[in-house]
Amino acid sequence: EKLSKRRGAVKLDKAALEARMAADGWTKEEKPRESSTHVDKYWIDPKDGKKCRSIVEVARKAYPDMLEEAPQRPKKEPSSGPLACRKGCGRCFGNSGARGSHELHCDGTPKP
Image (cartoon, rainbow, N blue to C red; front, side):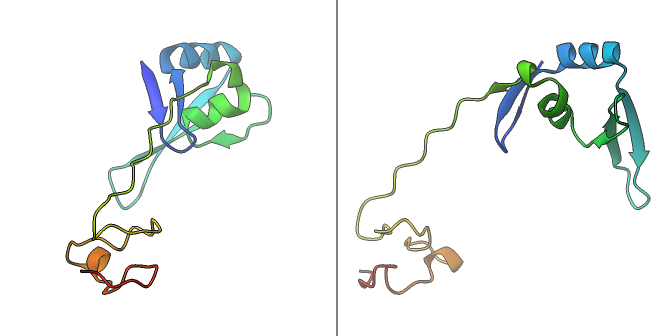
């Protein structure tokens, strides 16, 4: 199974990583939250006893050779036309609401 986390997106083979962690003595602690049904999972480093909050964090700390950078998504091209923002602020569109509330483009030119 491949995991992909978007923040500094990475790919890793979770099953292979968990097998290697088990062989190296990592332990998993599951702690239920008091106010919900959510269970927080922590992985404890056998060397220093420090907790990691995610399996990706474990891989970054102890097994960087098992990480692979995920390909970056292509950035969207800015819209064109009279309602498109000329500077890319993302707020100068013709739709209603907060994103379309400007009467002027961010460069000072009036919207049509």
